[in-house]
Image 1 (cartoon, rainbow, N blue to C red):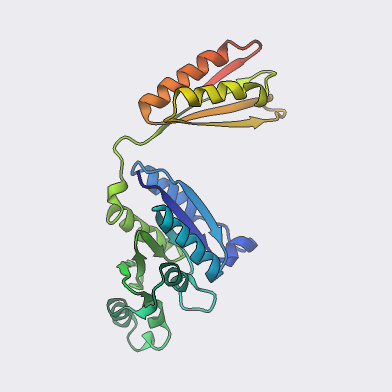
Image 2: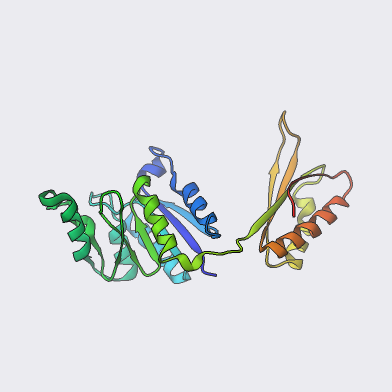
Length: 254
């Protein structure tokens, strides 16, 4: 199954001037379609760094969603970075320019039309808010940083070009909390054994040092295809329950 990654671009996110809203929304869009986000990366407005991230995603064969940096101001360099990553020139896109001119008339020139200069061979992603399109090249999809524009455009991508990634049987996750004197290190052999027995699943462990409301514990999650995750969780839980002084609180069980 092809993996899907997310780039969120903008110096304002790295400086703390703005807080990212894209990643949680994208995770929700994907979950509704049975898709898991494989990775995410936050980058500033640096053409070389953005180009390198795009090229890495392309070389891995990943699908890529990218939010931000496709405007026409000097700090917007995602369009240029995409062209650089694919080794093609940045060229005026006739259909994209026509959409901007239809929306803004004489005000489209000389600057707004620059937002329709895309990597050679790019396809358009429709923008329902102001008709200034995003674009795609290869399996990489680029939308603005403004959520009110980006989110419906991403939905169009997921239900159009990336519809093939939809899954009727998305991965499931079962989880529990383990209370007791054991540390993660004490349970490492059990965790590794679970992954050997059930290679189709992923196992996560989150230790909590404890506070006034809840004692020290470890939260375990096992995620994967439903039959594998269910069997792995029960296998892991049964062996965990045999350990002395261990108390288990089930959170989500088969």
